[in-house]
Length: 73
Image (tube, rainbow, N blue to C red; front, top):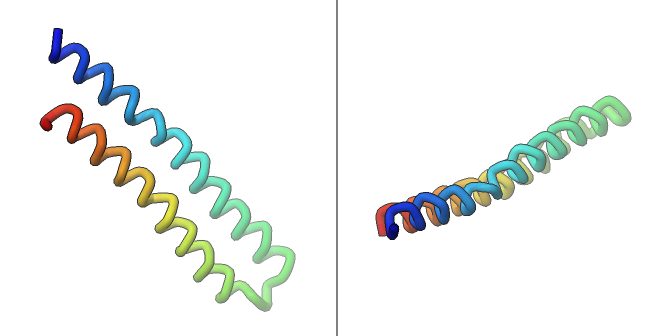
């Protein structure tokens, strides 16, 4: 029973990974849109996009950390 509860909890904890995928799509979609509108600031926009990518990806890492803590903790 405890093992089943751990698996269900870990599965529920990884639901946030869907939001991470959507967030990455929004970040890079906005980068492409902004670069197409104003090509002269593309270099600065890439820096902002990489920062957004790192912050969004950190949510995925925290999600996996929680899932592993539930499974193996």
